[in-house]
Length: 174
Image (cartoon, rainbow, N blue to C red; front, side):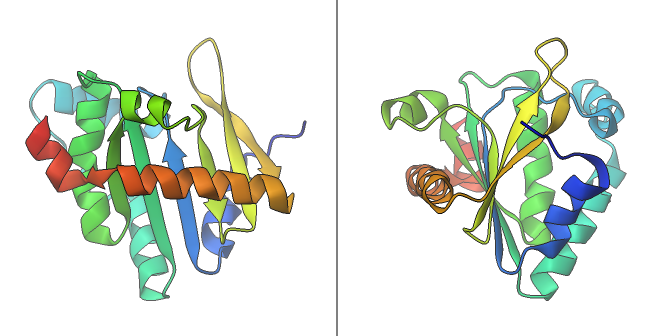
């Protein structure tokens, strides 16, 4: 299995035509760009520049072009510190034009939604994300264009989205 990473992986986020939809399953991601903002958040001193990070520029640009990002975060309850940080950051994502919704893990498991991360691009390509067992860092994405598999991944996203609630509603609940 070949994993795409780097520029080839980043190109997926600029080349889709209409929708990029993600099921996000992990309780923690080990992203180098998040380390300092996460540290500051946990100290009670959130980085004001985190609300204007490069990802949000991409989201705004895509939205201006009529292309949209959607995400459903499957989270364990009670929320981990990292998930609280994600909930905080999702407010800026939503304001930039990316729809981030939340679904508790127990409900996702009862609905038989698989527990792996994947992006669905234009409902014609899936990118299943693979992470290091050692430190949780992203290893790369396995690209799948088999129509039956992509359709299944999209159905899981649709089900998760249907069962999920908005970031605002979720924040009120937790």
